[in-house]
Length: 116
Length: 99
Length: 130
Image 1 (tube, chains in turn green, yellow, orange):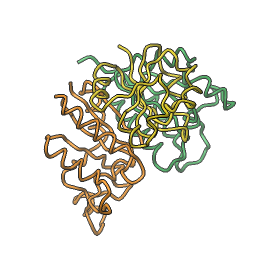
Image 2 (spheres, rainbow over the protein chains, first blue to last red):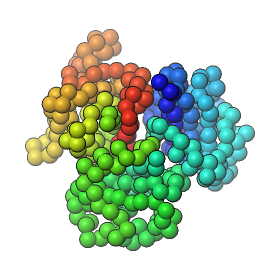
Image 3 (cartoon, rainbow over the protein chains, first blue to last red):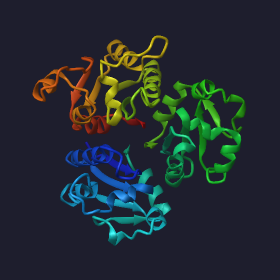
Image 4 (cartoon, rainbow over the protein chains, first blue to last red):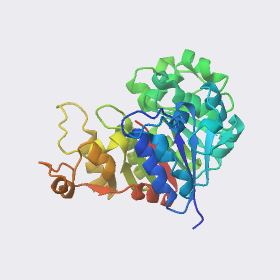
């Protein structure tokens, strides 16, 4: 079977009880299924990649594990970053910023899209 | 194949619709369900119609009826039943829900 | 076609389980199959058999259970999300020394792998957000 393209879309701020960690769990489990897994951080979801330095409930620390998993690529919506005064190199992990056209193309090319 | 986007929240969480519009491609269909149907009320829809002109818009008729807003809907939005929702899912790919 | 469904909201604070049930009924009526219904995040509360619905209010959880039995549809609840929300099977109640087990036996208690498996096996994966 050809691998399915699965995109996890993270669009909420990190501190909503367990919801952010539960999304990260989904992504990490998705990554072990040998599919083409990627993630898109959009809107306030970009704050999930801001590392507060705290050791408790800091989902950005969890996302630091992503490069060691089989995740094809991590994307962020460039406008969402810009609107919040964030830059790609201030985030916890290496990401690729996408323009609006890039976001459209990314979503259109998926088999499965998982929202947070 | 064109994508189906599903929005189930109203202006209470307007970023769900904003993100949907950001990611939808020309020719995609946006289906409003649950409280998402409030976006289809004519003046609300007029506020997003310009950004949404290259996509097809549908609402679930059951959710419109249960909210008593049938007479308020924009004529640019098509009311469909639950069976037609299933048909939309079958005829589009991928299916993308916005939270 | 073969569908997989994910439900992210609970019946007390979200329409998500109800919307998903309507979709599932319509899908079966049209001759489609449902590979699995996966309850995640707050959606796991639909499996909590201790919930009591006041008379005259729709009991979405009971309707899901009846629908699953009638059509042989698998209802799966994520174990980690369920534990966080006090939805426990007998094994978990024993292991964590809790007074009651409260998962409706119609629901399978599974890991997240079952969600991914459903998403990649089905022709379509539809999420009903909270």
